[in-house]
Image 1: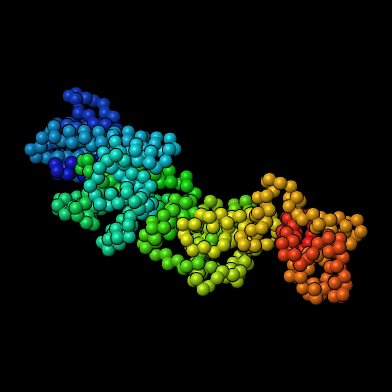
Image 2: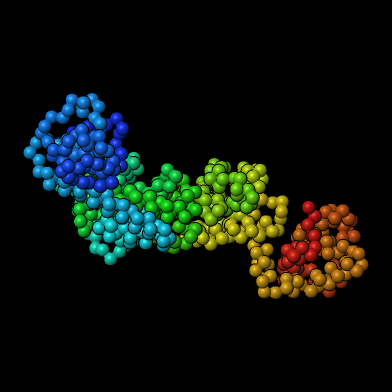
Length: 535
């Protein structure tokens, strides 16, 4: 009845509300002469209904068109809900207006079923927009929080500069975003819990008062009138839907349906773990696009950076943190993201693919060192977390490659050491190469035969020449330092080296041989054939 009161405002109706309150109305009927029974979920309409009979036989809602005074008790305690219209009123006009309201309600229900069905089909946001277009009758587009185009109505000509820019470039330019900020358009949309209608100067002169949306002038003209509504997930804005007034005027019913459309798209977007975990900050969407290789053009990257408030330094690296599967259920990724973001300066963390991924930047004259992450090590150890660090890079188009490096460092590092929590790609690159080779050959075949000969000699004669050789090579062939580590006299050390060369039949001054020997030790260490580390 409240909605009817608003829609029938032109007829100056007066509502008498019963103590039982308002209830749902299913349909509209005219009261037939002599009718004695009435249904509680039906709105009846008449010019001369017997009010006492209506009240005593189940009547709940009545529209009465009459100039006659009502009984006194209607002012204090109406027995049913009554909407009274007085004056010289066209009965048919009132009836048709109410019928239109019910028709629109029925259409909204049918349209809602179509939108919900489009969600159930699981074919993505573009499919939902395609299904919504015939219902709303105007072209639409969906943007994420960083002004990137996610979906739009295709094969429709829209003479609007913003539409053209988005459908051509796939995102708003810096100039357009600056204009929106200057005109405080984003602030208006963000501060409004209702859809926002942007109208031309001519149209805004008309009365557009409505409790279901806010009205503001267009940002620039000539432009097409449009309505924007936010897409929210768990109380945070993750995107927006825009309807362009191109093919027909935007109606109140379209805006009502837009509200449902945003909820449907929100449900579809919640299939994306990144959006669920996002804090709703613009750089997160940009970084996710870099990590997924959705942005490959440096010009596009530079233009989007201009309005993201991201002042990246020249040197970049990717740090990825991952909890174990057990701890993933006990430590929220959002907690890890926020803590690491506070521990590492010049960092932009996001949750991506069940990892916390951090893009870190430093000045060109400030290289990355483990000391940069010393505050983080304690946090990693306390929470049973592992972290992989990529090489340094400077080109954001290569973000995906260096993200993969950080994952590789973490995966290989965890296999190589159960005690460590922090793994740099640079230090585990050889292990990565060895792992790749393991798919194609027996790893022992990569080792220098003379080293295998020395190992065999040790096993048969119960000597430890292999350990001596490893320590000697690890200490850059420094005789005295190696002797001190092994707790033997330097003369003994010299004799051992001579014996090793004799057994292996090699020259330890041969650079190529030394490189192969070092690689051989790495291979043997990888396959756990020897325990060559002193620590």
